[in-house]
Length: 251
Ligand code: 13P
Image (cartoon, rainbow, N blue to C red; front, side, top):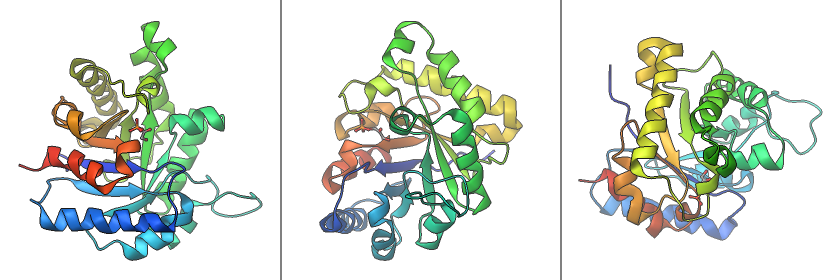
């Protein structure tokens, strides 16, 4: 078994204009001038910036997208396919983010179809799972998260084409985070479910933590058992903050 290379990914959500390309440039300068980080770096800007950022990215930062349709093409006004995103240089696509599940009523079955479409293009899917505050208070965290995982991850998943992101809904954009012990517990449960389904390969999937990750808490969250990187929202918008998180992977 090889230990997976961690992934630190920024999800810009519905933020960023063409002027934001400067943040990519600034990040690449940080990466070049500071100690090399032992992780892969990714930014997922809104669709409108994917092409320009993929052209601008100098190699140290990969570019991805935040969603796609599960069909390759067709009569789906306003939608974007994985093939289109591949065509403009995206390497990863986030699917099943809780904001898409909530705002667009996406089910785990839809997420599964999207992830399978991403695999069909030879790209990597970042499949998000996570419980709401009510579910956590009701002691249902593991049931909800493993239930979403089982349905959302397609059979075509491998450690190379799929990354899991555990993002407790109540921790997103709130400044609240679970304890390190709680993160380790649910990540270890996710690992167990992956091994049960995919055998030895289950040990090699990367499992990211997301939800209010910032430079001041990245070290301890990234050191938790079975945490193989971060999916970062707000703190990925400014290169200096994002770089502070990447420090968790610099010695
Ligand atoms: P924040 O880092 O802003 O809490 O967002 C996390 C997230 O939703 C990343 O996908």
